[in-house]
Image 1: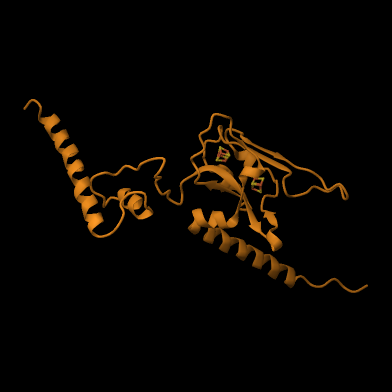
Image 2 (image 1 turned 60 degrees about the vertical axis):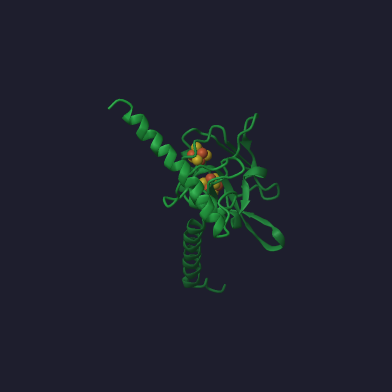
Length: 208
Ligand code: SF4
Ligand code: SF4
């Protein structure tokens, strides 16, 4: 029959429209807020929602799943008196594996000893070139570079991130990727314990 498809489509639209209001009323009666709340956004993004399933971006934003990947950041641990202990050792593996080659690292030497300083002097990521593949985070042996969730970075200027922008505390990492953080933390602690046990098992050097 001519027009059957149009009627079918309109019925879907009408059902969504109707369900939006019945769902809004049921949330209102139960004293919950369906809009501009984490609970409401999560429910609208779930398969249990009825009616409207979009969000009012940018006032509302979808809650990112843990494995969501955007431009990476560098992790630092919070040491004594708030000292930033940067995990990166400037080994350069991330820069080497990065497919579009958008990572630059500047290393330097200790002026007194002339030996290389592990922490990078400068570290840049061209966020406009980064394709969010996650290779850098995957290959980093020190869990020092992690994929971020912050996708809201559109600007009129070029986004080349330096260390001031890239460095974020381990607590931020734990907050956005709790499962990854726990797993990596357990692995790091196990490695440290194994290293300590190996060092303790070494026979002491004979006294001269
Ligand atoms: S972020 Fe990781 S892989 Fe990249 S230079 Fe630093 S330690 Fe090496
Ligand atoms: S996510 Fe991929 S493209 Fe972006 S900096 Fe890391 S390796 Fe390079």
